[in-house]
Image (cartoon, rainbow, N blue to C red; front, side, top):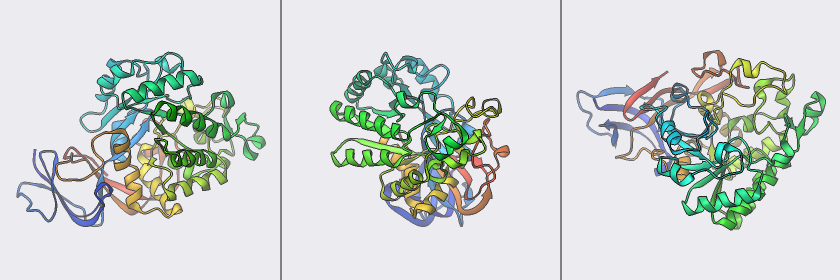
Length: 410
């Protein structure tokens, strides 16, 4: 394999506190040198003047594995939620999930917390960890039984595995299509109060504290949810959280007109919640940004609102929407990159997330100021459902390098 030289890039490596203009030399799939190394005569070259070189993005919680879409978004590693067909509740299924994206995207499966994600009988988590699962997850729903959840967290603590939870109280949200508020009332949509999130987080945090377990909220979406997390951390709880750009950029008014592409899970929240999330992004309460990639076909979205499936295709827009949210919250680019690379890699103990010498050559090259307009019809993803169709954004992925090979060129 020929060496690869990336020249004159603005290198942002949050894991090592680096933000400088330099060259990157890749040899034998690993980063060999950063600075002004001597470049072999047979090296392939990428002139990266005007581009940012950052660690390949680590997407902490996707619902479908679409390697081509991930690479187009600069994503080189994903954590795959267990909500698959069949559910990842068996070691053989965990092993199979890891092979989905190779060689160009590393898929790290999350083990189903319960068999079939039914919320009753614990799955064979230890065997799935041995088969490659990097964490446990409850999937798209909360585990309703506190007793089952407590046993799960005790089990997770014994194996030092993070438990990833969907934070909505099932008893309050069953059958809901939107967040309780003026918009849901005006449209006549079945709704649930936003406090369902804080109640779920509060329960799971207290159980995790009692079990001595690590807890990760996949998507926090409300002001009260953030307050519960802050209070838990002040007590010393081992809790981290993420969110998706949609909750930072949209509020529940976006569903006006029964726009099914805005039906998400959790649902879009109030403007006050959206602003609180931006504050949580700015003050560091939110640890990770995830695409929560959950593409749906036209047959699942072009339906009456109540019948449409929640979810959006998010992999190809993660970076650009994160930059937009960061500008709204006055968060520097280096921190945004950390939230999509170094931090999720550290939380879940997966390789990558840095550009240190000897590290895997997983690199995204992007132009942070390049303007473009989101066009769902041009998505690589099989699902072209996004609430951001037609939105002008900036920040475009130009190259994605995985293991020293050019896996995407935009």
